[in-house]
Every structure is written in C-alpha cells, then in structure tokens.
Image 1 (spheres, rainbow, N blue to C red):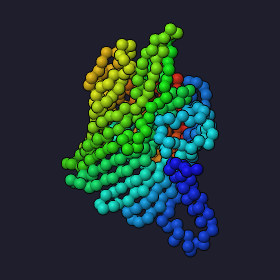
Image 2 (cartoon, one colour; image 1 turned 90 degrees about the vertical axis):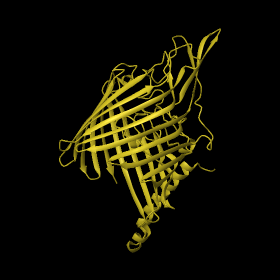
Image 3 (cartoon, one colour; image 1 turned 90 degrees about the horizontal axis):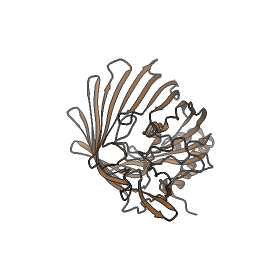
Image 4 (tube, rainbow, N blue to C red; image 1 turned 180 degrees about the vertical axis):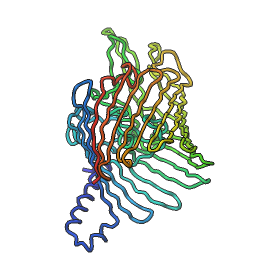
Length: 454
C-alpha cells in the first residue's frame, strides 16, 4: 500500500537515524569521518507538566522528543529533517483520538494510541540555484515578531490545544511550501507557493482549552437545537493553494517589509441557518474556510536603548459573528485594519522592558456583532538576566481593554548547562467568562519543565 509523503518522510527520517547509529557502531574509526562528515545528527528532549490550581488536578504531563538530521550536499545545498515523538500522560489537552479535520491528509500526525503520536515536523531542501535561494519542503515561514499575540505571522497555522500558551515555534504547524528568495533592488524578495491545505488546529471538545467565548463560538438561543455539519475544507491543490510575497529592505536605519498573502483564513467561518419544524427550531451550522487578501508590512528601528517596531495589516474579508437573528447566515463580512506598535527599552543592564498596543478596526460593522468595532489589547513584558545570563526572570501581561480580561505569565528559567535548561512559572487568567482570556478563568496553572539537547 502506498504511503503519503508525510508518513514516508517519517519512515525515511527514522531509517536515516537507525542507519547512522548502526554505521557508527560497525564502521572503523578511520572511515567514519569520511562517511558521516556531511551528516549531522542531534535531538532535543523536552518535558513539561502543568497543575491546575483552580481545578486542583494535574492537567498536563507531556514528553516531546525532536530528532534532527541534516545532510550537507555542498556549501550551498543541504537537506534537513525534524521528526517529533509526542506523548501526554493525562490526555486532557486533546482527549481521545485526535481530530485532524483541519489538517491536510499529507500533514497529519501518525497516531500511536490516544496519548502518543509521531509527526514529520519539518523536512526541506535548501539550495541556491541561478541566483535564487530555494527552500522546498515542509517548513515554517516567520513574518511577524510581535510578543504574546500574532498579527503578521500568519503564513503557518497554529495549534491551539493550549490556547496561546505554547511557544510560537512549537505552536506553528509547518506546511509543505515552495519558498524562493532573490536579492533585488537593494532588498530581498520572497515568493511563497503553499499547496498544503492545513489550517488552525482548534481545541477538541472536552479539552482543557476548548473555546467557549461567544466571540469565537456561535451561541444558540435557549431551546433551539444545533446541527453542526462537518467542516468543509478546500480540496483542489491547484486552485486552493496559498500564495505569498514579502519584500524586505534596510533603509536609513529602518528594517522595512511589505507583505501580501492570498490565502484561506485559518479560522473557519461558522455560517448558520435557522429551520422551523413542527418539532421545534434547529440551527444548522456549516463551518467552512473563506479566501482572504492580506496586505501588510512591518518596521523597526533602534534609537540607542530604545527600539521602535510595528506591524500593520489589511484583511479584505473578515467575518464576525452576529447576534442579529434576522441576519441570514449569522455572520457579518467586513474589511479589517489591524496593527501593533511596540517599544522595547534596554537602558538598564541585563533588563528588557517592552510594551505593545494591538488594535483591530472593522471597516464595515453592523448592529448585533459580538465584538466591538475597535478592539484593543495591550501587553507588557519585563525580563531580567542574572548570573551571567544563566538565570532569567520575566513576566508577560496581556490585557483586553474592551473586555477587561487578561492573562499574566510570570516565569523563571535556569540554564544548568549549555544543553540543559529548566523552568517554572504560572499561567493566570482573569476576567469575564465571555472574554477571549476570561473564558479560561478557571484554567490557572503552575508549570514546570525542562529541555535537554542530545
């Protein structure tokens, strides 16, 4: 039976690791270097546990092993493969069998039971051809650099099984992508073709961080039955691919980018219809993905100890839930302008103070929408290094101005050795249960973890 290129890639990477181990044991010392000099093998082992302080239960005990293989064909060409073995002790984040309806069949994880899975995390060829830098394969493409929340960083979808608590590198879902870059006009032009039809991985029903806020989930009137239809996914690799472009340039001290992405927005739109029958009323919900043009850019510049940075985007097709029962499909379509402005100050030794302002403005609002026309969120990050930067203490505070809810994340990490780091911290939610952060008001938790390079 033929395997998908994801599973074949996993098997190929595993085969390389096994073959390399056997080769290292069986080959004489004087020939090992000649056979393996172009290969590099490494791995990262990470474990993190979380205890729910409000629920008085252990919420998480995960172990993650990321083996990595790199083969250097020449100075300009190399192949990189990163696999992931993931196992969870309590099965609270993604309870039961994985639901992967948002993920393309060729990018899905291979399940080894309810609590364990294996994934081809990244697998790409990087080379230089005719003056073009090419990266072909499963990869991450990072555009935005905002803290805590994402604005321009939208090329790769996100796994929301831990809401926004996971670090961005782990929460991004790598995609099969053709990534080409040229030096042109004193800057750098990047073109993307993404045939991988994978979108945000939303929390499963019953999961610790399953969404419940009316800002995200349609709310049926009392006594009305809900018929949730299967998720409709784009299925044509030719017409449903995403296409992106970024031009970046350094100009008079400013790092500038102009970005464009023609894509399916990674959150599905929950189209609704009301049906009246002799037995009562039923709301049918049809979730499906919708095309969007994103036009944006970013800037940053350093003025001594102060760095100013920002990102801005315009979305042509933003869909917002509405409470207006006379609306035909339960959503309102509007253009959206959103931006983030950030200031980073490092005027005190080993200390960083950072503040950000996020705002989203709907250009064509309508009565009854569940969110405000202008939505504002602020963040503050305080970080200080101790003991020659082996001990870090930080706190990140995210606050929704409109809803009054938020998230506070104090954390301390210590680097025991160059390849071993441990940490502990809290994730503290507060606010009304209808808010984006407040919906997890009872999900406060104590977190401890470790990461070791092998």
